[in-house]
Length: 282
Image (tube, rainbow, N blue to C red; front, side, top):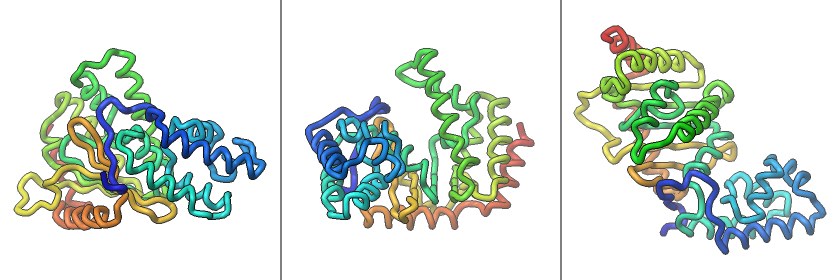
């Protein structure tokens, strides 16, 4: 598997399973920290992660975020050892909870692009729409699982208003709203919510019309993000798993496709007009 790509299967939403390579990486971090005379709390303050995150990395229970690795490198004198070790971890399939890692990167991203052709992105969903998806998931979820999923989604949605300096772009296929998932009332509330989010200065929402002669996104949904260190990553999700991409060549392809789709979709004003039209038809 390419060092810049790794997959996670369905059901891997929690912490990654510990492995020899994760435990070894964690032991190196712990050894360097102790050699520097730092407690986990002190080290956490320097790299701007909690002591609990530091503990999870050191115990081999968590894939280290790229930001964590870079900040740790600075604390330990920029030897390059941790950066190289982390690169090897990415070659190991199934080490991390693939979406958990992506969600962690979202917390500090300065740019986040999302194209969706299957369902309204989680960041834009209403509670009624999300619960409709959860209730009809296969295999079925129990009530506690549904509640836990909604709580996690609602917490994640705080990004839109909680990070006003992050630039968000959403490209949504028109048919996602024409489907009327959950019924007309759920769809009315959903469109009202999307229109409200579209008024935020840091959010751009564009609709890809159903009738489209050319389309650069036919290979499926994608998400792209830029970190505070101006590194780019991508995440693509399918039926039973997700793909995290850090390889610059592959990221370049996805960035070009996203840019082309932005030019193919309706402009911001026309997208709002179409949303209002669909709202009026319900």
